[in-house]
Image 1: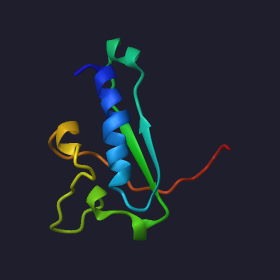
Image 2: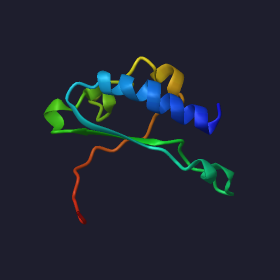
Image 3: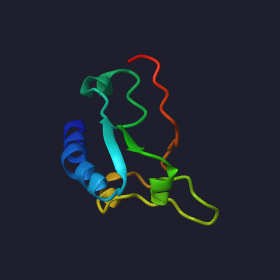
Length: 101
């Protein structure tokens, strides 16, 4: 799949499905690498990085990560099987600290 096709699918198909499937999501951001970086000697390590923002852990869906013992991590949208590579996907649960406004 071309970079352009991937980014278009992520933006127009997968993104809306993710937002629809994440109750309590406050904000959803897609960070797309610039297409020209794929032609460089060191192509991007990832084809994109999503961010999902929630008001707190009480509304954070357990399907996104932060597994409890014995639970598997599941993707949040019906399109994930077509969209994500098999295997574990790195994730981070953090708190925003604003340094510059």
